[in-house]
Length: 225
Image (tube, rainbow, N blue to C red):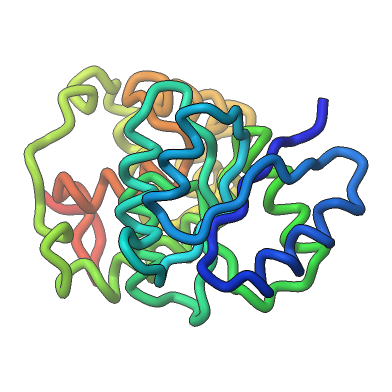
């Protein structure tokens, strides 16, 4: 079954370009388009979508707030934020709002297609290390960057799972965590899967965001209190 994609951008020319690229793929189908976040939310009430390509700077309702509202819904589609500048505050806010990643608008077509397929399969397209840099840079500047109450699921983690979570939140890969803790990569992968399940998180990027929001990791430093 083809991946159902929605294009959300106030520039018709950009939507046309993206649509042409996606239409040439046998495993993708553009099922809807919208010129702003409000229109996107309205369309999603009656249209089944798997992945939303979401611009951020739009009239009426911007992409960040639209992403927040969309991701709060049950069985929500995955959202890819489209940004003009790498590592900007919109990418940061989009990840906090629930997006599965962000892409630059001038990304090569092959990378965009791979990103759509990745988020559709349940992966994130932003490395935790990139998310860490985003959070280090912007969390002290934005209201949402303050430490928030501890997530109740964190108390369900074993000591080892908490240890793995903190290393994930610091941007380490499974291989790096395995070397640090003297474990096999398969064991680390199992721990990460259990962490995602216990905390009801979709991907490693959400682990990084949660660690900052709850104060487990501090901007510019390591583990928190």
